[in-house]
Length: 125
Image (cartoon, rainbow, N blue to C red; front, side, top):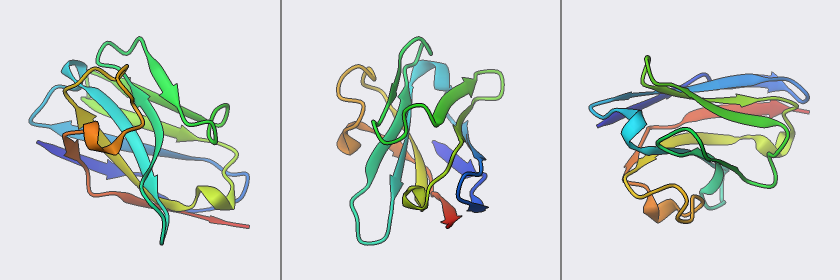
C-alpha cells in the first residue's frame, strides 16, 4: 500500500490549501481514511476522517468549520481542503488508512494501518 500526500506549501494566515492523498494498492472505498498532523516537538494529532462509505465524517474541534475532508473514489484519492489557515495549523500533514470502521475512535493514531510520508504546511502570520 502506498499513500502519497501532496499539496502542502507556504501560505499566509487566512489563506487556503488543498491537500491530496493518492492511494495505490488498496481501494479507498474499502477503508476509512484520515488526516493527521504533527508540529515540531508535538505528538501527532487527529485532523479529520471519512468512513469507507463516505457517509460519516469526523473533525477535530480545532479545524471544524475551516477544513473539509472529501474523496474521489474514481481517482482513489482523499482531499483535505483547508481554509482560513492559522499559524497554529502549521505542521507536517499525514494521510492514513485503516481497516477498522472509522466510527471506532477515529482520532486514535494506533488504529490506522497505513501511513503516507507527509506534506509540510507552513502558515506565515
